[in-house]
Length: 448
Image 1 (cartoon, rainbow, N blue to C red):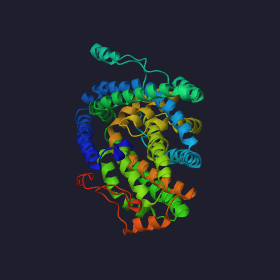
Image 2 (cartoon, rainbow, N blue to C red):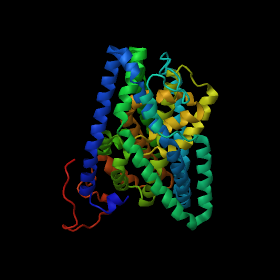
Image 3 (tube, helix red, strand yellow):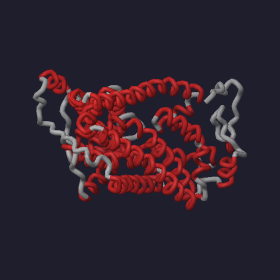
């Protein structure tokens, strides 16, 4: 929050744009790697199969990060729930809504996955962590450098205990929570570094899969991507749009038009975090009170990840089908319960969703981890839809909570959405509560 209050929007925008180029480089590198991997697999199948260790190595790097990510995010998440709940009615309503909607989104992903059966017919080789590659001792040596994984479910159990214990400690637990927060920042920084190896992992994984299965692998991946985009669009328009119209009387398309610049920013960076300061300012300008926006938006960015929820369940079913071992109903339900908890830590960091997916598979069906390499190749193509859905879900949630607690100015909403009271892009000041600004205080105009 300091970014939109403690520094000028111009500075914030410049900072984001510097990071934007790096994100684009990674995105382009993954696209090139996927195309090259598919070509190698089609034209030189045996060479493609021999590149499988590249994908396996990347999967091992992701596995290495699962336990620390789960531990830090769950401990901090339980602390965040306690803090949000103390705010009272707004926090309670927001958290209740987030839990219901994220569960609903996970269930939708399972339903769509069971309807289209993504990945069916590929019959990839199951992942066996104890199997040694007999082909090349150098490969064994290099893969052996990467640390082994820590069991997920015991880590999750320990994190829950630690989280509640820190709650009971009260102020004494604050320094420990702060230290764990710094540890989480370190873990995510390592994860971001690992994601720069994603093009290599994607190249090896796609080449090996296409080399073994031919065009069928490409068709299956495109099927998953298209189904995911369609599911996210239906979720936004029908589910979120229906709730918004019924509860607040606001048309989803008018709200999305108002947030058009934020959508462009998210599409460019593949992260909804990039638009967080602007979303706060725009929702306050829309007529929602500062306390409601201040509690709902930041909490929603950790606990209301509708797009990520849909992705996690659809990708899990894709991997299971691709490995020739589809999940039965009981396994799907237990996976859904795990993802409800684990997905709370998959916000805003490149690769966190992939790590959460790997954690869910490892906890339930470790032999399916080999299929995560395929997801690496198309994960970046689905990241925009994930981020846009997460962002829209949080914008809608804030309007709904503001309506429920009667902390929203309906007349201001109409003025803003009709265009008669436009958002001040130059200062990002809230229009219906003008802040006097001297010429010296005003930031320079930034062209978007």
